[in-house]
Image (tube, rainbow, N blue to C red):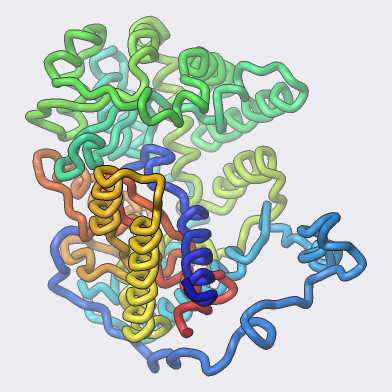
Length: 532
C-alpha cells in the first residue's frame, strides 16, 4: 500500500473513532419526512469555491503554537500546544475551547449572515425565509420579552395548578414533552435495535434537575454546596411566578428528586446497551408494571394502538411507580411547575433567563457570562430541533459546493477499497469471517455534507412578535413528527445533524457515518484531504 494511501486510511479512521454514537444518550428523533414542497434560496452571492491554498500554515498544519523548549519525547502535548496554552485566554462565555470551537464560531457567523440576509428581503408570508427570519427576530426582540415577563406562562401555570388527583398527574406526565414540563418517565421513538427497519418506543426513567444521581446522593463539599444553591435557585424561580411558600416547595422538590435519584441507574449501567434493551409487548409491560394507568399516560401523550416498547431501566420502574403513588400530588405539581418555568426561561425576560443561566452554567459549569444574544439566537434557530435543515440548504449553497461533496464521497470509497484490501490480505481471518466482514463493509453507508431530501416546514407557523408561541408550535411540530413514526418503517435517508453542525456521528443501527458540511473545513483534520 502506498504511503499516501496509508495516510488516507489512518486519517479517516481517526475521525471515525472520534465521532460519537447517536445512541450514547436516548433523545427524541427529529428526522426528515418527504422532500419539502418549498425550497430556500440564497439571498446573496454564492460563496467562493475551494480555496487555492492551505488555510493553516504553509501546508495545512499550524505550527505556530508549538513550544520548542519541550522535548517531544518528554511531553508531546506540551511540545505541540505549549505556546497556545500559555497565551490563550478562555472567553468568559465558554467552559472550554478548541479547534471545534473555532469551526463552530465560523459556522455561527455564516448562519448569522444568512439570517440577516433573509430578514432584509422581507420574505413572503408562509415561506421558509419568513419563518427563519421571524423566529430569529422574535428571539432578538428583548424589549418585548422584558415587557411580557412571565405572562406567556400563565396558561400553562394555571393548567398545572389544576392537577389535584393521581389521574390528572399521570395525564400531566404524559403531556410533559408537549407542555415542556417534567415527568419521571420519558420516551422517544427510534429504530428498533434488533430490527432497524422498524420504529420502536423507548421508555426511560429521568426527570432530575441536577446533572447526575451523585449530585443528590454524595455528601462531598462540592455536592452539598450545589444542593444548597439549587434550593435557593428553585426558590427564586418560583418567586418569579408569585408562588406561595416557595422556599418550602423548593425543599420538597429537592427531596422528591433525591428519592428519584436513589432508584436511578448509575451512569455505567445506563451506558450498557445490553442492559438497556428490554423489549416487550405492551400487554406484558402493563402486567409487569401494573401500578400506573399506562393507557391514560399514553393517551395523554397522543399515542394510540401501542403494541410493543423497549424499557430502558426495568429494575427502576416499580420503585418509581411507588413514588408516583405515594408522594403528595402537591410535591409533584411543584416539581412540574418549577421545571416548566426554568425550562422556558431562555425564551422569556432577561431576568428569568439570567437566573436559569446563573445556576445551570455559572454554578454547575463555572461559566460567568452568557454568549452574545445573536449567538444564542443562531443556535436556537439553526438547531436540528429548530429550523436548522432549512438554514442548511442556504449554508451548503454558499459554503459547500457540490464538487466538494463528490470528492469526499470518492475519498470514502477509496477508504472502503483499502479496507477491503486489508481484509483480503489478512491471514488470521477464516473465509466465513471474511465473508461477514465484506458484507458489513459493503453495507456501510457514508452520508456526506447534507441530506438528499429536506424537511418540510410548510405546516409550521412562525410570528415575529411571539417567541414563546413560536417555540411551542415548533415543539408540537417536532413531537407530532416523532410519534407519527410508530408503526411506520424507518427512513434511512434521514439525518440526525444539520449541514452546518461541526460534528459527526456513527449510527450503528444503520451502519452509517454522517459527516456534515460544517466539520469538513479547516482546522478539522479531514478537510485538507478533500482537496487532494
